Image (tube, rainbow, N blue to C red; front, side, top):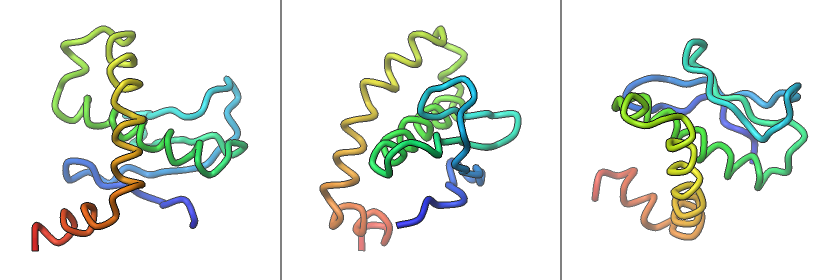
Length: 104
């Protein structure tokens, strides 16, 4: 499956792009540009987990949690939630469909 071009978080469309990461790493959310960049050289599964990770950073900023935590604390929380949320999304397609349909 192809990498999505956008993800909507809190009513905002965030661009998603696969790029060669000059500084290394798996991905980055750049709020000023409204873009999530994922390492183009990463495997599809690594890109998927990184997308979840970066979406969690977007969520932190969207609700202002980034103002209450040091960047290192935010990163620790996001790293803790990322594998769980990724697994729930990946392993429960019926749950995702239920949510997408608004509980119907």
